[in-house]
Length: 149
Length: 417
Image (cartoon, rainbow over all chains, first blue to last red; front, side, top):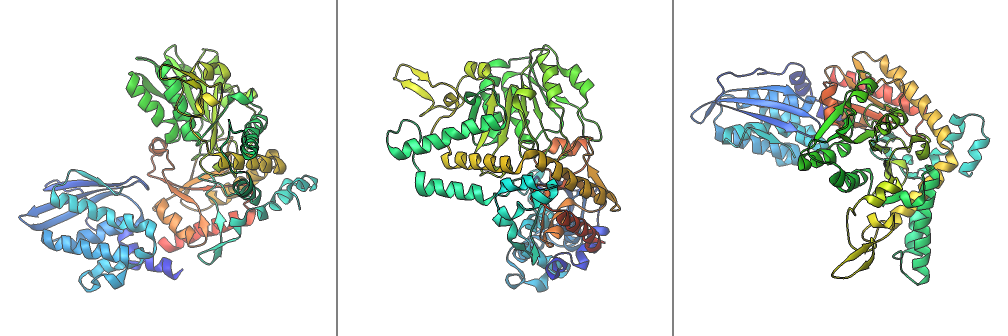
């Protein structure tokens, strides 16, 4: 049960219930679809860029609590950051969910640290990372869709 | 006790429960709770008898079959070919030469699509399948149709998950060259009226392939009565090992069909100028087969016969009924698949909760279910859901386990509230 509580932390439950930045963006610089064929999670991530600064991020779609909350927390966290800062956050977040809190510089993560419990559930790592893959593809102009497979 | 003794007991439920201890895997605990295994539609657990038979084969009989003149090869050949007879008897097949061993249902369908399909389906022709097919009974036909310029047509279903027979009738035309239909849906649990559907297709001279993967472990299947031209199933879903399955095909089709794969064992003679193919069923069995797996399938059939498919079917129906009634009372839960005639599968979605979260939370209670699209993405689209949670039952499951599932589902709501 405690492991389950670690996974479904209040921050995650809250962002799942009321996702932030959950809207389409008509003036997006780029948008990318993220799709997990295994579980049917499907999100579109929109970004607006001013040079290297991410001025706005939003998303829409459907998925599990982990992926939806991840998209929501990600969107609030990277807004106003530069693309390099977003990439650095992704790397830390990736280390957190794949290797655990000992291997990640949690101090820099803010609310993203709520996903620490995902590390104990290998089948759910893809859920947490899916929105980030979409975001990175948008920032790097790598096509218009990504999958976790 | 021996399993045959269960027939002396008063009710199927009493007798069936005594069989549970034949499955060593079910004794374990997961996440601090006794394992509740409800992922039987994905694969079933194996009774000790199957495990022991396969171990004995490798310890005492292992040898390559056919053509060997030494003792072990004869033993192994007898054991392996004996399973063919066993399968034919088990399903009341027309003849043992119609029993082709394959890797599983998927390979069986690929064999028919590649061999029968390539030679019988042409430009402008149609292949007819249903909305509730597993990807394994969609993609091989799709590839065939693309290659031949033929058209894949889809039999619609109603909101309960039942085939619309009137629509099916309309879709059977002179252009239809093949019908592929699942016997029991792996997502909805619907038992399709395959006998009727075969009759309707045969009235127009159209052959029918039935995907029996989810039917054979759960109900008596009589192939002569069904009269399907091809019937496919997998051993691992019927308490046997992975990697072996059966394609039953009518002799006149199999005789006319070209080989699917070629090489050793499927030939009578080979020169650099010409090869003469082997007789049925060996024409379709190139290379050394999964001998140990085939022998395991034989043991699984013996085991099922001892328990009795009628008792299995009746008992699983009780489990399904109890689960369905309890699940129906959970607020916000919707059952996907409410056909009148159903077998051993309960698919559901919960309002505002993704199936993946249901699966993770149930797993923390030691309950194994499957979540996702269950290799039936077009069916997910039909029901307008991204995925479902699916509990699928076998005769070794208990009413108490069904109750644990329902408690688990309530916990899902608590955790995610």
